[in-house]
Amino acid sequence: MKLLSILALALTLCACSTAYYNTMEKFGVHKRNIMIDRVEEARDAQKDGQEQFESALAQFKSVVSVDGGELEKTYNTLNREYEDSFDSAEEIRKRIDSVESVAEDLFDEWEEELDRYSSDTLRRDSERKLESTRQQYSQLIGLMRVSEERLDPVLQAMEDQVLFLKHNLNTQAIASLQEEAVRIDDDVGQLIDALRKSIAEADSFIQTMRE
Image (cartoon, rainbow, N blue to C red; front, side):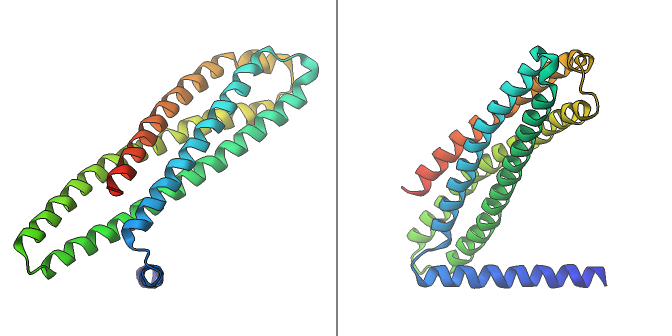
């Protein structure tokens, strides 16, 4: 029964995607255009996420120098930064998934259309372009997924501090978080580096797709 439900959902999603693509094509917007748009959206989500995580890092690093009377305010600030970072991470994940979804559909369609050529020359040219685009896309989605993997360690480290402060609003708690601040600094550094590489690759991919 569970398998049937999964299959039904998959067929529904497939039908929805097909209807969406068909509608967009009536307005002259093809899968290639949709893919470019989605890569741009994923890149922008990563840029926004980079800014958010840099802001959060600054706040979490400053917690070690907080006065005792500012503990409640500090907790609220860090909790807000954690929640904003969590939302940014969810947006990044969603946008990466949307890129992967349209990419699979685009490449399937592209490969199927190769058989429709009557010109061997044009078919070979299209085949080479397909392979080249696939290779660059593979590099792009690989870097995007690496950046996505870096999200969880950062979010977990932030959540640990927020939860600890929630139930330990005292100066001793602040002192005990000094070592955790170093961990967050390192994790965010790795995340920012991964995001920058992914963003740069997205820019390169978009430029290639528009040529």
